[in-house]
Length: 139
Image (tube, rainbow, N blue to C red; front, side):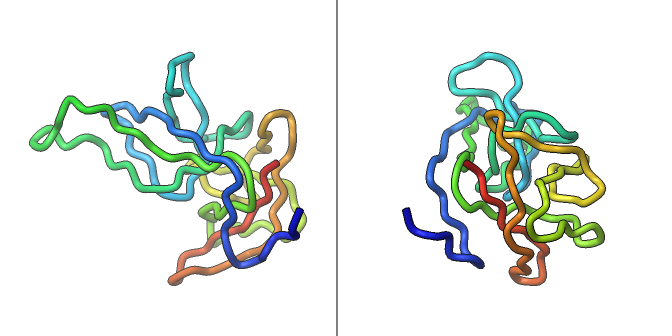
């Protein structure tokens, strides 16, 4: 297997999840699943615990003036070297175990995260277009 290329995201596996109408999720935030649905229903990871993965696009709440009856789906990267939005005031150090704040972002002041009984590790701090992010290895 090739070594990771730092500074770029590498998605090994991704899944699709359902986003409920009242839920708004931001790109590159950590998400968890809520309930036993197929596809899984996504929710913001607002504290430590078991994480499903990293959402790959913005999903705004439904605007009732433009609402449709179509299901809203989000793509979630679940394995690889993944970009995660970061709290710029509390950036995590390289080599640290991933922690998450109440906004689903990486934060040194957050709660511990696990993914399938493994601990994601911060590999690099990056800034893209003035936005603070971290590259995290997910098994």
